[in-house]
Length: 163
Image (cartoon, rainbow, N blue to C red; front, side, top):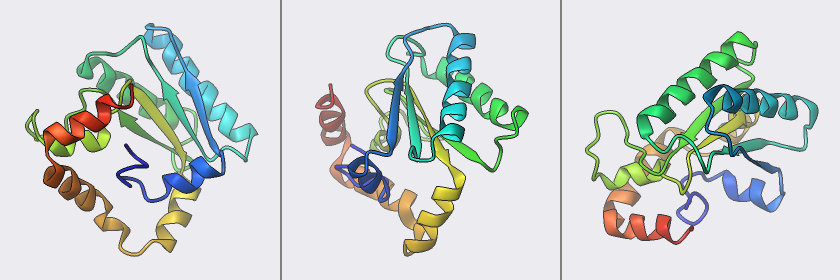
C-alpha cells in the first residue's frame, strides 16, 4: 500500500535499490522484541547499504494499545542508546488509529499494515529526501485526502490484498 498508493514518495526508490531490510520477529515477549529492535539499530550502524529496516511482528502485539506500548519503549531505547537524531521509528499496525480520529476513518489506513511493524529510518536519509522533495509538509495531508477520497472499503480491500 505504501508503494502502490505513494504514501511515502521515497519508498519506491529504496525498494528498487534493495536497500530495505526486512526482519521478522516471531516472539511475543516484549523484552525480546525490544532487543530485536536494538539489533536492527546495530545492523544499520554496521551496514550503510541498508537505508531502512522493517521489523515485523506477525505473532505479537495484535492489540493496538499493546503495540503503542512497544512503540513508546522503542522510542525510549533510541534516546537511552544515543540514537536520537540518528534513527527515527515509524509504526504500522493492522488496527492503526490516529489520535483523535474515529475508528472508521479511511485516513487510518495510511498507517495500517498486515502485521504490526516498526519502521526504523536513518534521519540523515530522511533529511536528504525531504530537501529534494517539493512541499514535503503536504505529504501527510495528501495521504489523508487520498485515503478519504477512496473510502474505507477501498482502503480495506487494498490492505486485505496484501495477505
